[in-house]
Image (cartoon, rainbow, N blue to C red):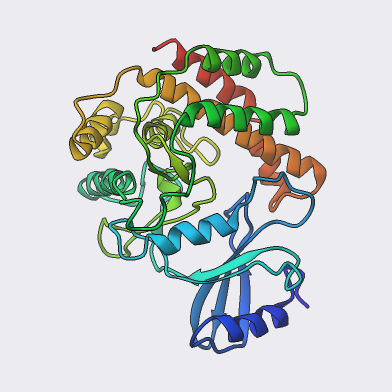
Length: 340
């Protein structure tokens, strides 16, 4: 019995549900993946990844590994690069929570968007491919992929604001006037529903992408837990929000960085490239979408903090460090609101 989960039970389950699987397996926990604990499985038949719901009492709609499995399975063969899905285990008696197994994709993971070990031309190419893949996600044929019922088709921002406000209130640990003000501003400044409905990733950023070992090409988009049908500008704004944060281990942003020298696109250049790929003339009131992404991230981090305090975090020390940034994200959202 492993301290992580029952390895024998997983081997037995994989032998029955993963074609070609041959054990035994060696288990290694990935340091990343605050929400859903993620493990590398090295077996005689190859390398796999197991992603599970965390143990403990969870919010009803959180940690949806079954949705992650469904959407990545549906995207096989599309222009969106994803890992090959093998099987979903909904029987919680196997290891104590739902999980799925997929292929391990060999690739480069960039935590720091400054890409310090990459040449300037390759940086430019990597960010352009990041842009290409985002447009590909938003161009997925929902009917052909069977994702037409993957979420409601209207009022995305209203639904998201309601959902994350509820999640935030359920995990609130202290009064935060800036967050209260941001929630009210978003409610008062909702744009009219323009009818755009696409697949949205929900957490699109460079550290959720894998790039080929030998070329600046994205080979897999990871962490689809927050994916749904919705409005594409939320994903685009999430990229810009991330870049507005300070560089370093926690912020993982580009604030104050000389992007031109490094070959990294400035915000407006990235947005314009996306609009060209999507056939858009531009985006009105982008500040609303930016404020929304700050709000959503603040709510997510509040949940991470609460899990750490309750003893259910995958990495408690890191979770508390991330949770300390909730006020900064709330303030960032209010600042973005002033640009509308």
